[in-house]
Length: 250
Image 1: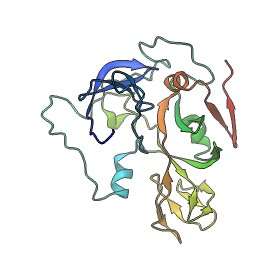
Image 2 (image 1 turned 90 degrees about the vertical axis):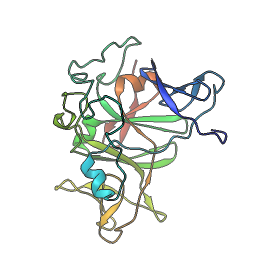
Image 3 (image 1 turned 180 degrees about the horizontal axis):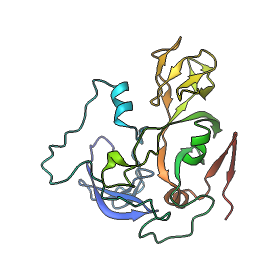
Image 4 (image 1 turned 120 degrees about the vertical axis):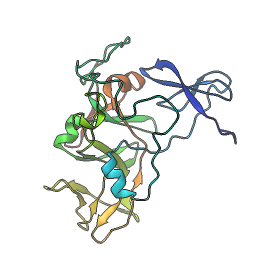
């Protein structure tokens, strides 16, 4: 930020039911959703948000066999791999939530949340299970959302690796070399494009076919529980399937 590298910790507070960080250099507080400083001398400054995805270890290892992995030998007395939030999603409502009512979707529905320009879109995981590839245009930007099964929830069982399969998402610009591709999910679960028949990974890389080695440009998104996202962006359009998205009625 302004040529200075900040390092962060967690304040222990939530805003919009979302993590509030602090930087150790100025002790300003920062909203995780937006990357914006909301308290302190850095108020109004905004961090650059990088595209990211929560994916299974298998998907990461296949895509990046030489990728770096954080060590568990950190010096901290922590049981990595065990979830402190086991059972969090079981009750169908957020624990310790105090805020306005949530509308449109179940509180604990996972959504692919995307902000572009002045618009926001939420694609529910429950819709993606039925329609695992979604094309949409938001604020004039073409995008495609992929869902792939095989990622365990950290909110269901104490041992994360035994958690229920909630899947992973990727969000990308579907244009490659100036040509817009149309994607679909094959019967075997692989994602392919109709134009060349190339297959694509969850991380947006063509793994076979004429476009093998090509990489889609990722679009910033969050895999988020609906109750916290709709507080942050109450004007969010909700994707309902078959190319249709509507605002939530309140």
